[in-house]
Length: 418
Ligand code: URA
Image (cartoon, rainbow, N blue to C red):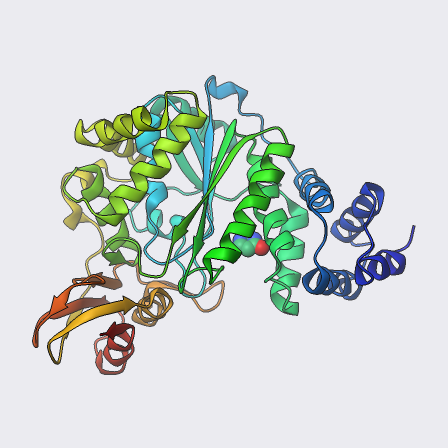
């Protein structure tokens, strides 16, 4: 077998055999196939696509490039949830405790934020003392104890994806639906939970800009998950406006706690109920309406908040944050962005809000940038609201930036008026 033949086949839209895909991925992971040949193949996939069967094989080979977790020690039905990323997306911090309090275990590995999107691990690190790295045994023990734990991606999970994703970032080959599918699903399959719920986002703040593209990715991921023996469901949800009111690490933890305390309703609450209910249904807990009711009850009864409190404690964080969120990092400086006239809000551009939050210090442009845990934005308006001159549209927070003049202009430009 040789790599040039494989590149040529994909270039001519001819189907690769399972052996050819194994040869390519394993050869690249071990270093026998060089970056330039892999880049050429990735570009051919970007331009021509590959079939569903090839995507399934590619995903499985990438999964098998490293460890596949054995979660049997947890001793119950396990679920994983993945969001394709967005702005203000703190749903994992809410859904994990909700489903755990309904008897479904959620062991989860998450990533850090880059660019305009946040990462769950950064959000958790805003809780002083919370350890995002735990040895596998302690991670599994925590899940067994509370039903829920989130740690950073660790161990030897999907080394093929690590290497290929880095190459895709450097060669303009990220935006390919089969490659995105294989990258995400190989990691989900290596986690090896009984079910996987995928939240595929579309809109200004998401990877997939249109609903149609998101549906194609969602359908493919669901097929790959099911073909790999998992109960798998993909939902397509809106990321045209930021999710909830708060964007930024500690601010998002605060909002998640307020939801778990049953103090906030609205789009974020409804999405969390919907996603949780779908996991509970996949776990066989009832029909979708019964599962929605269970999820609402998990919040209103305080059971989900208790799971979150115990999980934070077992990870080394201060559980008192669930009662007193002022313990979380507080910004030194703040600035209110005000409406300059009377108007109805037509849209709020998620990507621009994410970029504004990044400029305030909440995000990274480079992988190793330091972030300001207190920084971010609290939205005080929603799409469809009528605002009057002098009303606050949003409040900007930062501990590293005290001159808000330029950033406020960018923030206000994210809001479109009718
Ligand atoms: N997230 C991933 O993990 N992989 C992709 O290819 C895109 C988003």
